[in-house]
Length: 90
Image (cartoon, rainbow, N blue to C red; front, side):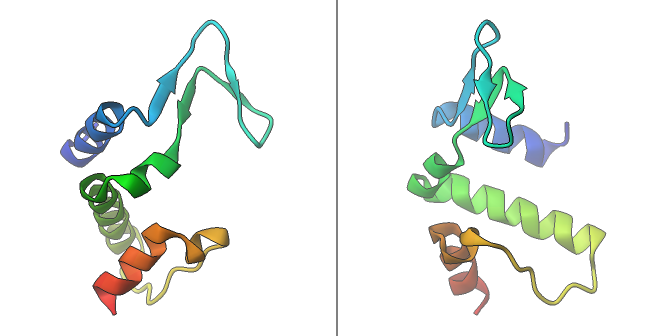
């Protein structure tokens, strides 16, 4: 795990966004079962964590897709995280 991944994981644990339940798995919307659940909605209430996450995405996208001009999404395009990203980049 790289430094950025470690910092984000630590932040998600601190804000209690990550839940672990190895005895009784969570059922994701996809139907998959997992002992780990990350409630990403909690990130919206913590600007410093939100900044870590979108800066991480920016870095990964810049490395893997250096010619990308725009990133599109579904419902997230109206979310607070997307609004914060748009505000930051113009």
